Amino acid sequence: MRTKLCGVELKNPLIAASGTFGFGREYDELYDISCWGAISVKGLTLRPRRGNPPGRIAETASGMLNSVGLQNPGVDAFIRDELPWLAAKGIPVIANVAGSSEEEYAEAVRRLSDSPVAMIELNISCPNVRQGGVSFGTSPERVYGITRLVRACTGLPLMVKLTPNVSDIAEAATAAEDAGADAVSLINTIIGMAIDTGTRRPVLANVTGGLSGPAIKPVALRMVWQAARAVSIPVVGMGGITTADDAVQFMIAGACAVMIGTANITDPMSGPRIIDDFRRYLEGEGISDPGALVGSLRTDEADARREVFENRKSDVL
Amino acid sequence: MRRTVDVDATILSSRVIARGTTELALAVPRNAAPRPGQFLHIRAPGEFLRRPISASGYDEETGAARIIVRDAGRGSRAISGLGAGDRVRLLTPLGRGFPMESIIRDIASGKKIWLAGGGIGAAPLLFAASSVRAADLAIDSFVGFRDEESVIGVRELGECGSVSVSVGGLVTDAMTRAMESAVPDSILACGPVPMLRAIQKICAGRGIRGFMSVEERMGCGVGACLVCVCRTGTGDGWEHRRVCRDGPVFGISEVAL
Image (cartoon, rainbow over all chains, first blue to last red; front, top):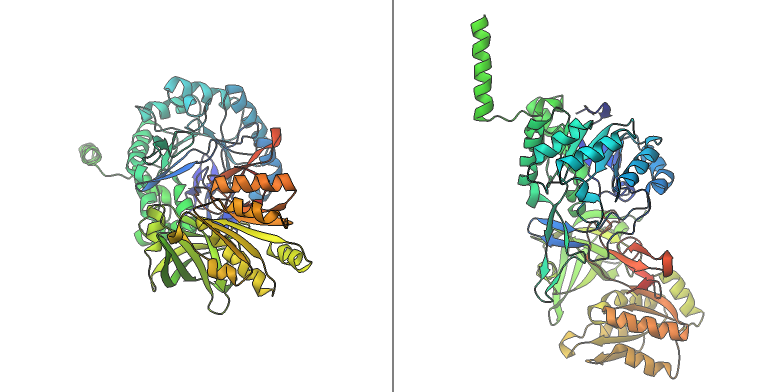
């Protein structure tokens, strides 16, 4: 089950996704959270943020919309109050970092670089804040610019979390790679909205929010496949994973590891359940290294390429 | 040790107690029994998100938690449609409830405490009242309902003390009238936002303390996703606190409604 992501040892390729897992304390009361390969913490900003007013959630068909808006205690409080406990759990901690300006991103990442976090996840894809957030991720030029800036601020492995709210995900992934990212993670939520017909008001106080859950899985899987073909750095896949089979699909599409988010909200025991099922799947397939799954998608195109390769080999012989 | 668990609970009974309102009894593990003001986070059949429902009682003998569900939307209808023998996934117990030990101590020492409920908001108060009664003490209630068909809990509250029932009128009017002869030391409230606002005003004007249980659309139910917040505090120090974890019961003047 062991795998490596940007040089960081993971006991398995399953990671708790940012924003659905807090800093881990609440779930650790239900089960030992050290079963995860890693934990990506709630999005952190340089200064504390109160987030958006409620209502912040709406149920949709096979999914949910949220507009939390990056409520968090700020990096300093995280490093002081949350990280010592979390780091003592013995699993890699991924610090998800967001901001409203380049300076904010840079300073937050600098402060985290001297802490025991294992990796930075650069969140340029939050759709729920008025300034910054997703606007840093919607054009390849801006993805390149912010990644390059943050790259210069930290020696920690840098993973860039991409938004699906773009026309070409491969371009965005390539921009992050070109700017020095060690990995990309995708997808963040898809911007959506819901209306209460009784009151004719939006269900979310912020009007729009981010759609997550099984509803977005096919979109996420397609984007992970496209990104993985475009870059040579690791791709971490997420979007509506609720079963081990879902996780395996993302890895076949090209993800080196996967993140599980909304499933924690609907079923708090999702983590241990999916991890157990994933272990059983690997055993059943006789696979010891989950890396064997990565990018193993069989398409006619891939089969034809393999055939050409085999023929050439026999010509040479 | 009492702790939160995620379990498949069997529905022991279900009965319609008012228009569009169903009382269900669910078998929950004894070490996961809810206390007054705490809630169960229930995965309704066919729904994606769970729904938080306050406990309206707990029977030590049978190990059954009681809830009262009003049909407000798809989720609540899916829960009220469950019948005896059905099983449902739920987290129990969740949230910070009413501080019953100190409330009971206060009543025993002669302090006057009132319950104030509006509509389905009476449900958690039934639990608070029954735990006062279990301590051989009494507590007076003021409850209000839209119409006769919506009335719930009057018999149960009547077993625990005097009950004032307002039908079609404001429960706060009945409380204000009663305050002409005696002002309570504190109030435990649950109900629609306009009612809670009116109670906050009454309490602020007369120096009455107490607690209220608030409602918000919820995600994980355990405090991780930060979806179900309410605004507390005043001035620059205000903050968003989690209804599921820091509440649902807050100090009566704590929440900006």
